[in-house]
Amino acid sequence: MTADEAVQTFLGWMATERRASPLTVEAYRSDLARFLGFMAEHLNGLPDMAGLAKISLRDMRAWLAQEQARAATAKVRKTTPDRAARTRSRRVSAVRSFFRYLARRHGVENPAVGLLATPRTKKPLPRPLSKEDAKAVPEDIASLAHTDMARQRDGALFLLLYGCGLRISEALNLNVADLTLMKASGVLRIKGKGNKERLVPVLPQVQQVLEGWKKHHPSPLPDEPLFPGVRGGRLQPGIAQKAMREWRGLAGLPDHVTPHALRHSFATHLMEGGADLRVIQELLGHASLSTTQRYTLADEARLLDVWNRAHPRAQGNQHSQEG
Image 1 (cartoon, helix red, strand yellow):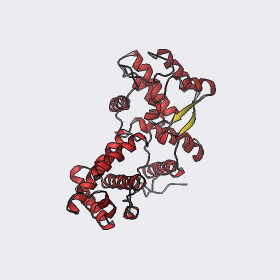
Image 2 (cartoon, rainbow, N blue to C red):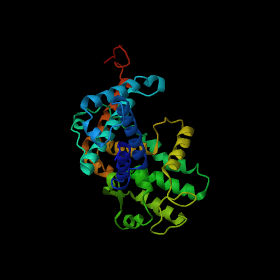
Image 3 (tube, rainbow, N blue to C red):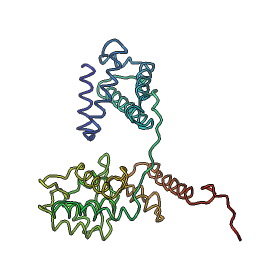
Image 4 (cartoon, one colour):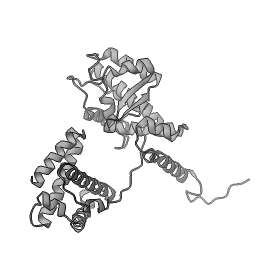
C-alpha cells in the first residue's frame, strides 16, 4: 500500500466509522497532502508504508518550520498570526490521527509523532449578542423571508437556537417526531458532537412557537425534517447563515453575528443571570468544563471594557469630585 492509498483509506474510515463531517474530512485531506508533499521533497521521494514509520522528529519539525515560514506572509494574505497557528495546530492533529490509524490498522508505528509539539494558540473568546439583539433575531429574520412557510420556519429555528443554545447542525438534524418528546416532557433529545446525546429543556414560549410551526409544516410526518428547505429535504446550514447575514447587514451588526453567536448568547446570558457553570456545560453538551469557562473570561473582558470606557480615571479624567 502506498502512502497516498493509506491516506484514502484513512479518510474513508474518518467519514464512515468516525462519522466526521465532510468539512473535516476535506480539511484533513488537504493537511495530509501538504505533509506528504513536503516529505516527498524533503526525503527525495514519497515514503512508502515502511518509510512513514521512519520519518524522524527532525523531519516533522522541518515540516512545521516550513508551515510557520509560510504563515510569516500572513499580513499579505490578511490572515492573523493566531489564525495561522490554529491552522498549523489542526494540521498536526491531522497527522497524529493519521499515524494513530496506521498503527492500529496497519501496524505502522512511528513514536516521533507523539513527540511533536502542537503550536500554541489562543482560543477566541465567545462574542455574544446583546440581550435586545438576541431577542429580536427570530422575528426580524423571519420578516425577511419570501414565503409564509419560510417565515414560520425561520422564526421557529432562530428562536430555538437562542432559547436552547443549540448548534445550527443540532437544530437542523431534528425531526418532527422529536416534538412528541418535547410535548410530553418539555425537553428535546439532542444529538451533539460525536453522536453524544443530551436532554435540553425547552422554555414554554419556545415550545409554543415550535408547536405553531408544526401546524405550518408542509409535511409534518414523524420522520420528516423539523426544518425543511423550500424544495423539501433538510434545510442546509448555509441557508440559515445567509438569512442571518442579510439581517445583520440591515441591522448594522458585525460579522461575528452568526447563528453560532446565538449559542454564545444563550450561555452568556444564563451566566449573567447566575446559572451554575456545570449546568451550562450540560446544556451546551461540552465535554470539558474548561470550554464552558470561556464564557467567564468573556464576561470579565466585557466588564473590563465597560470599566475602561466609563471610569473617570480610566479615561484620564483627573479632576477631583467634591464631597
